Image (cartoon, rainbow, N blue to C red; front, side, top):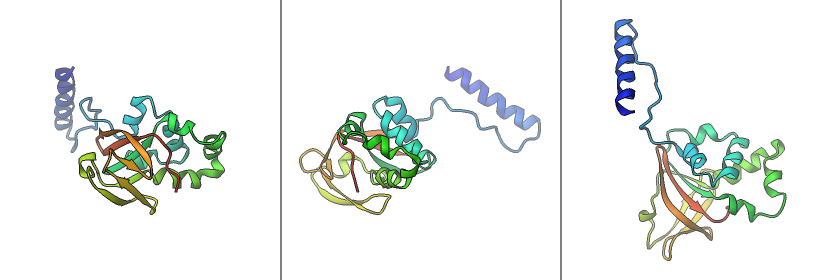
Length: 167
């Protein structure tokens, strides 16, 4: 697979040179690490989060360069919200409220679990509100427990949490 991909890329580069093109076509790279959105989709346990990110028009943002640290609630975390909450938030008329909630789960920069182990800190979320991060006994964010840390993505890191953070 690698050799075949390499041949395609080299062939495209040679074709570009021979045809006088100034650049090589942008071909998919099967070795490239997926971004935050693609990592969440592939995990399979973030269907509600991915649907919310789509409804809030934040896909392009979370596929951007970053780096971002995302505290990602699982489907089970969303299920803990009162009945009808998710459905209501996904409605077009609640887009701004949904954006505020989702951007509350994102911090600019890449913060790994080791960066906060044994410490407490306040972190500014992308929506401007402060998150309280406690790494003194495991890691919690505003009381939500990080159940899986340091899920790497090409444009940042995901920390899986067991609750939805509400600003």
